[in-house]
Length: 141
Image (cartoon, rainbow, N blue to C red; front, side, top):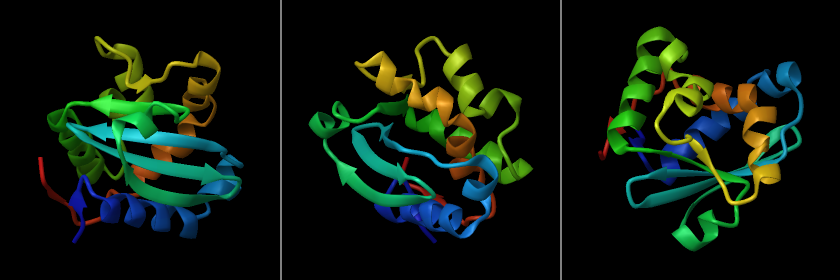
């Protein structure tokens, strides 16, 4: 049972997405995404029709990525629990809603053109998190 956040948790999500028909339905995805949970940073790389890499990184590497998804640890847990309870994120817990309705943007990056990948590939990114709905998860937060 993977713990969130951890490389194992993100790798399990990546493996599930890679085995699904999501890329076939949604198309290719090319980006380097970061996820920040408290003081921990993770990188998830999407290339064409698969997630190609998952790793823990530092803040300096996170600044080099297309964007970083940033929420409090409690907000991450609430989002993932909503996904678990409903099989997918409900309205207020979708990545798009969290980005648009929060006091600060969910997807952050210095280069707007690179950060735009969050919007272009939003459905694939949502699928990355939604596919964990039946994944048994413990929380380190």
